[in-house]
Image (cartoon, rainbow, N blue to C red):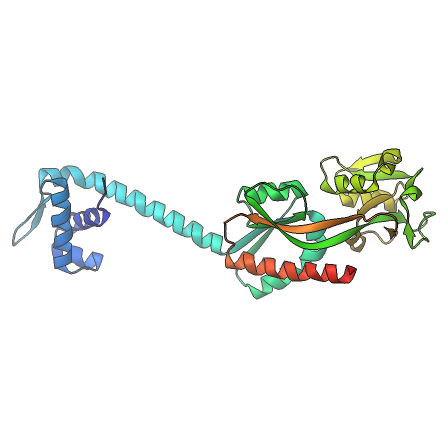
Length: 301
């Protein structure tokens, strides 16, 4: 059954104010329109709610029974409406996105400042997460979009190519390989290496690209993140393979060497929820990220 909320609102206003004219003023209606609403809801309920005389308006027994129930529910609806409206306004004042830490730390830091300066009053929330977690976060609707490494994506996620980035071998400046311009996979044999934990998408890409040589390498250390791996290399404890952009965040003791016998790269993509449009702010931010990362492809071409 359809509930006539406008009629109930009119009934409460007349009952509380005891006057059709004052109730019409509160609701910004003509008295004729107000009377029509009262008459309609009485017809729907099949009973009189108000008794109107030339001097006053009073409630019938049915009206007396209905008033506290309706008033309470209208107040609850008003509170709910206010909550939803405030939530919507709050959502309009922020943009949330996720990114793998290596991309976020180098490519997006300055870009976020530029975006924020151009969008005063808008909060920019970055969730830096592992590659797989970025996809899950977007899928759950906790971020409008994500920047991650290419891989298998769920059916409800769309993936957009942004750029390709090479990996390099990071060594200490005093290491025997530091003077080389490039290295081959066999140059890693006999060297203590540090790699990122098993769940890392980076690790899987590296091991797949190195092929059978990977199984012969001395993966002596395993850490949680790239920063720790670079610190081990800086200390001369090990060498490692990481995306080239990490060189810009690396301690000065490190040298990055490219591979000349294997195409060791990763594709960076943007992920969004299928059929869910981005907010204007998120679309604007993603457009800036697209442009920034397209420059990476141009630089590597």
